[in-house]
Length: 148
Image 1 (cartoon, rainbow, N blue to C red):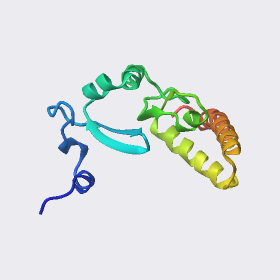
Image 2 (cartoon, one colour):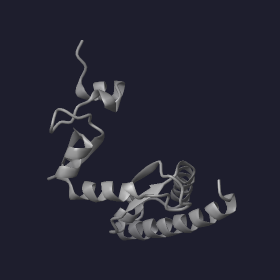
Image 3 (cartoon, rainbow, N blue to C red):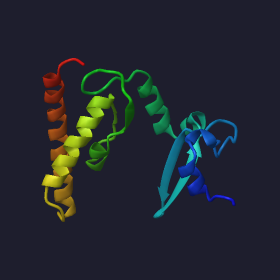
Image 4 (cartoon, rainbow, N blue to C red):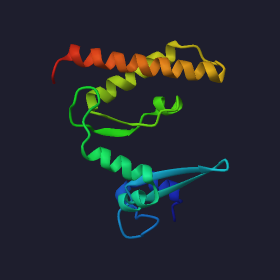
């Protein structure tokens, strides 16, 4: 029985897919493009992703010299800072695993405490506030945990 593309992707590993552009290299990037209200997903290799996206080239360059934004350690994750993007700032953020876990825990905690159903301008102000509070929290958290 043939599997649909989504089922195959969920059941396999990213290593099972070839790039949808060159059909040669392993697909390592899942790219979502939204145009005219419709979204399109493509599985691309690093080379093709960088060729079609200036942002991907910039990110690949930044990733080479990256360290954890908070403790300076080896990053395990990196990408667009979603909270900053929501407020109009586009910058990559890199974090080591301990900092990533604490960062995400703190944001979830702050989001649960804040009121929902706010009008959009108030939502943006809240995101700015949470983003600033998270950065301050992470600086203190790294200092308090010591160098690990």
